[in-house]
Length: 400
Image 1 (cartoon, rainbow, N blue to C red):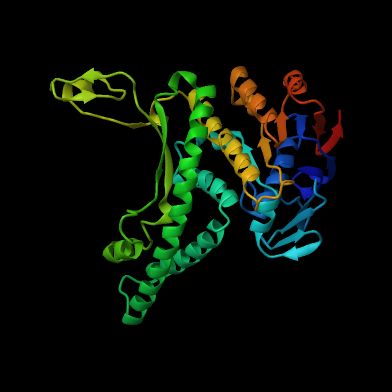
Image 2 (image 1 turned 120 degrees about the vertical axis):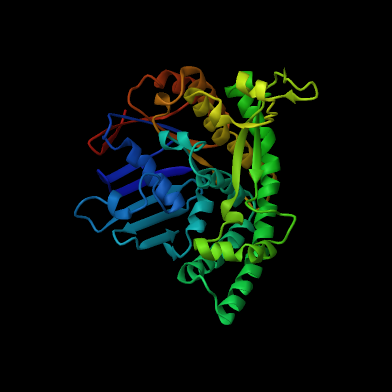
């Protein structure tokens, strides 16, 4: 848990020091700097901003760098400095480290904000990262395999972009990379699949709370990004000509995805007495006797329901991670997940906010939430015994 947070020259936060509690509410108008505070915590944990990937966009004007420093409850200190040219300096306990994953392990951070509310309709990257966040924190062997896979993939794609006709030397080099990719892919899939299986019941429980009327109709699936029954290098060799034409690698762990499917509990008879349709169908579908068994939930739910679904996806990860932490010796007991809620009352209705905060209050996690108004304070004070309340105005933060 973060005990003290210091931020320098990040957006309109020139010099800010914050002493935080288990629950922290940051109130302020749009543009006041409240989201920038969450951005700073995320930057320290992940090494990147959730608002913009270029450091010069969030480093204060006329400044060379932005710095975030935190003291956590076991006495450790973490710090990150981002320079305008994207150079990064990382420190753990005043010692320079060279891998962001070291800080990420010390400060697991989960973000729920308006920008994540479209992940069902976006490309697979954000949904894949959703699963990989869990796998990273629960399986120590995952990250080295993922890094090695990404390195080989970058080399392979670079070669594919250079030419459409490989020399014998290049072909031999590519086959060597493919073999390495295949070995790493098998382990990455193994880790992802195991965690996905463990995640499913927690997701179902979260759906039962947030979308109870759809509890029997929503299901979670995982796609590995390639046919796992065949070695990846064999499949890459079979698709080499197409990959050369396109200039990139089309299958593999980097194309993995998680989907939420909708399945109707209603059954509709088609014109064919042997066909039963068990998913939402139109009259046209019935007349054409199209047996659609599944559909993407994003195509069926309203925008408000999608928000609840995405919140359920995020929320269901915490109890799984915390249960793993209690039962696994490699987790330090002092490490507390940090949940960042940005203007969540603008995205969810009162019932959903109540369920979300009630669930978080029962978990050993630290919460930072922002709000335009103080309407949420009575609920927070009811759920947490000693929450901290902050007011932000023009980059200045005061305790209220």
